Length: 174
Ligand SMILES: [Zn+2]
Image 1 (cartoon, protein in one colour):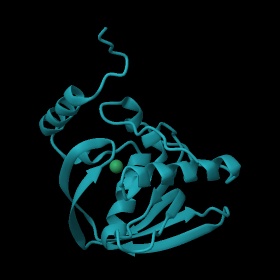
Image 2 (cartoon, protein in one colour):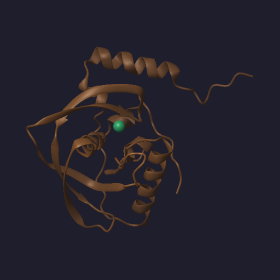
Image 3 (cartoon, rainbow, N blue to C red):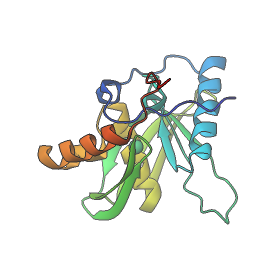
Protein backbone atom coordinates (compact mmCIF):
# COMPACT_ATOMS: atom_id res chain seq x y z
CA UNK A 1 0.00 0.00 0.00
CA UNK A 2 1.16 3.51 -0.60
CA UNK A 3 0.02 7.06 -0.08
CA UNK A 4 -0.46 8.80 -3.43
CA UNK A 5 -0.20 12.50 -4.22
CA UNK A 6 -3.61 14.14 -4.43
CA UNK A 7 -4.16 16.27 -7.53
CA UNK A 8 -5.52 19.74 -6.84
CA UNK A 9 -7.14 22.39 -9.03
CA UNK A 10 -6.34 23.69 -11.55
CA UNK A 11 -5.64 20.42 -13.36
CA UNK A 12 -7.53 19.26 -16.43
CA UNK A 13 -7.47 15.62 -15.36
CA UNK A 14 -10.03 16.49 -12.68
CA UNK A 15 -12.46 17.43 -15.48
CA UNK A 16 -12.11 14.13 -17.32
CA UNK A 17 -14.64 11.31 -17.31
CA UNK A 18 -13.34 8.12 -15.68
CA UNK A 19 -13.59 4.72 -17.38
CA UNK A 20 -15.51 1.77 -15.93
CA UNK A 21 -13.56 -1.10 -14.35
CA UNK A 22 -13.94 -4.26 -16.42
CA UNK A 23 -12.57 -6.80 -13.99
CA UNK A 24 -11.90 -6.62 -10.24
CA UNK A 25 -8.41 -8.11 -9.98
CA UNK A 26 -5.28 -7.65 -7.93
CA UNK A 27 -4.47 -4.25 -9.47
CA UNK A 28 -7.94 -2.89 -8.73
CA UNK A 29 -7.71 -4.12 -5.12
CA UNK A 30 -4.29 -2.50 -4.78
CA UNK A 31 -5.70 0.75 -6.18
CA UNK A 32 -8.52 0.68 -3.61
CA UNK A 33 -6.04 0.04 -0.77
CA UNK A 34 -3.92 2.96 -1.96
CA UNK A 35 -7.00 5.19 -2.13
CA UNK A 36 -7.93 4.31 1.46
CA UNK A 37 -4.40 4.95 2.67
CA UNK A 38 -4.26 8.28 0.82
CA UNK A 39 -7.70 9.33 2.10
CA UNK A 40 -6.95 8.46 5.75
CA UNK A 41 -3.56 10.15 5.48
CA UNK A 42 -5.28 13.39 4.43
CA UNK A 43 -8.14 13.08 6.95
CA UNK A 44 -10.67 12.96 4.13
CA UNK A 45 -13.99 11.09 4.21
CA UNK A 46 -14.04 10.25 0.50
CA UNK A 47 -11.68 9.93 -2.44
CA UNK A 48 -12.12 9.11 -6.12
CA UNK A 49 -9.37 7.45 -8.20
CA UNK A 50 -9.21 10.46 -10.54
CA UNK A 51 -7.96 12.53 -7.60
CA UNK A 52 -4.73 10.51 -7.65
CA UNK A 53 -4.61 10.70 -11.45
CA UNK A 54 -6.21 7.34 -12.27
CA UNK A 55 -9.22 7.64 -14.56
CA UNK A 56 -11.07 4.57 -13.26
CA UNK A 57 -14.58 4.56 -11.81
CA UNK A 58 -13.63 3.76 -8.22
CA UNK A 59 -14.39 5.67 -5.04
CA UNK A 60 -13.66 5.04 -1.38
CA UNK A 61 -15.55 6.50 1.56
CA UNK A 62 -15.41 6.38 5.34
CA UNK A 63 -17.90 8.66 7.06
CA UNK A 64 -17.38 7.21 10.56
CA UNK A 65 -16.57 9.84 13.17
CA UNK A 66 -13.18 9.98 14.90
CA UNK A 67 -14.30 8.14 18.06
CA UNK A 68 -16.01 5.40 16.05
CA UNK A 69 -14.48 2.29 14.54
CA UNK A 70 -13.28 2.78 10.95
CA UNK A 71 -15.88 1.90 8.34
CA UNK A 72 -14.13 1.70 4.96
CA UNK A 73 -16.53 1.44 2.02
CA UNK A 74 -15.49 1.05 -1.60
CA UNK A 75 -17.63 1.43 -4.71
CA UNK A 76 -16.62 0.21 -8.16
CA UNK A 77 -18.54 1.57 -11.18
CA UNK A 78 -21.15 3.31 -8.98
CA UNK A 79 -24.31 4.40 -10.78
CA UNK A 80 -27.02 6.57 -9.23
CA UNK A 81 -30.36 4.80 -9.70
CA UNK A 82 -32.63 7.00 -7.64
CA UNK A 83 -32.53 10.41 -6.01
CA UNK A 84 -35.08 11.79 -3.57
CA UNK A 85 -36.96 15.03 -4.18
CA UNK A 86 -36.22 16.00 -0.61
CA UNK A 87 -32.87 17.72 -0.31
CA UNK A 88 -30.28 18.41 2.36
CA UNK A 89 -27.50 20.97 2.58
CA UNK A 90 -23.95 20.33 3.73
CA UNK A 91 -20.92 22.55 3.70
CA UNK A 92 -18.63 20.47 1.48
CA UNK A 93 -14.89 20.50 1.14
CA UNK A 94 -12.76 18.56 -1.31
CA UNK A 95 -9.22 17.20 -1.03
CA UNK A 96 -8.61 18.51 -4.58
CA UNK A 97 -9.69 22.07 -3.64
CA UNK A 98 -7.70 23.06 -0.55
CA UNK A 99 -9.25 25.27 2.13
CA UNK A 100 -12.51 25.80 0.29
CA UNK A 101 -15.92 25.00 1.70
CA UNK A 102 -19.12 25.44 -0.25
CA UNK A 103 -22.72 24.94 0.87
CA UNK A 104 -24.29 22.53 -1.58
CA UNK A 105 -27.87 21.34 -1.76
CA UNK A 106 -28.25 17.76 -2.96
CA UNK A 107 -30.96 15.10 -2.90
CA UNK A 108 -31.18 13.78 0.66
CA UNK A 109 -31.50 10.10 -0.25
CA UNK A 110 -29.76 8.27 -3.06
CA UNK A 111 -29.80 4.70 -4.30
CA UNK A 112 -26.61 3.57 -5.94
CA UNK A 113 -25.75 0.39 -7.80
CA UNK A 114 -22.09 -0.65 -7.71
CA UNK A 115 -19.66 -3.56 -7.84
CA UNK A 116 -18.02 -4.70 -4.62
CA UNK A 117 -14.49 -6.02 -4.02
CA UNK A 118 -15.61 -9.55 -4.92
CA UNK A 119 -16.90 -8.33 -8.27
CA UNK A 120 -20.52 -8.70 -7.16
CA UNK A 121 -23.26 -6.26 -8.12
CA UNK A 122 -24.71 -4.50 -5.07
CA UNK A 123 -27.24 -1.79 -4.30
CA UNK A 124 -27.11 0.70 -1.43
CA UNK A 125 -29.70 3.20 -0.25
CA UNK A 126 -28.17 5.96 1.79
CA UNK A 127 -29.00 9.28 3.32
CA UNK A 128 -27.33 11.98 5.38
CA UNK A 129 -23.59 12.45 5.15
CA UNK A 130 -23.03 9.16 3.28
CA UNK A 131 -25.52 10.18 0.58
CA UNK A 132 -23.87 13.57 0.10
CA UNK A 133 -20.39 12.09 0.12
CA UNK A 134 -21.26 9.37 -2.40
CA UNK A 135 -22.89 11.91 -4.75
CA UNK A 136 -19.81 14.17 -4.40
CA UNK A 137 -17.47 11.26 -5.28
CA UNK A 138 -19.59 10.06 -8.21
CA UNK A 139 -19.49 13.65 -9.52
CA UNK A 140 -15.66 13.32 -9.54
CA UNK A 141 -15.96 10.29 -11.85
CA UNK A 142 -17.84 12.51 -14.29
CA UNK A 143 -15.34 15.36 -14.04
CA UNK A 144 -17.57 17.51 -11.86
CA UNK A 145 -16.26 19.42 -8.83
CA UNK A 146 -18.00 21.31 -6.03
CA UNK A 147 -16.78 24.61 -7.52
CA UNK A 148 -18.85 23.78 -10.62
CA UNK A 149 -21.89 24.57 -8.47
CA UNK A 150 -20.67 28.19 -8.36
CA UNK A 151 -20.72 30.95 -10.95
CA UNK A 152 -17.69 31.12 -13.26
CA UNK A 153 -16.54 34.32 -11.56
CA UNK A 154 -16.51 32.80 -8.07
CA UNK A 155 -14.90 29.64 -9.44
CA UNK A 156 -12.10 31.61 -11.11
CA UNK A 157 -11.39 33.54 -7.90
CA UNK A 158 -11.01 30.28 -5.92
CA UNK A 159 -8.76 28.66 -8.56
CA UNK A 160 -6.60 31.77 -8.78
CA UNK A 161 -6.15 31.84 -5.02
CA UNK A 162 -5.20 28.13 -4.92
CA UNK A 163 -2.81 28.50 -7.88
CA UNK A 164 -0.95 31.26 -6.08
CA UNK A 165 -0.39 29.21 -2.96
CA UNK A 166 0.44 26.00 -4.82
CA UNK A 167 4.03 24.92 -4.45
CA UNK A 168 5.90 24.61 -7.70
CA UNK A 169 8.07 21.48 -7.39
CA UNK A 170 10.23 22.49 -10.36
CA UNK A 171 11.21 25.85 -8.94
CA UNK A 172 14.63 25.95 -7.32
CA UNK A 173 16.41 28.90 -5.86
CA UNK A 174 20.13 28.32 -5.56
ZN1 LIG B 1 -13.85 15.91 -3.81
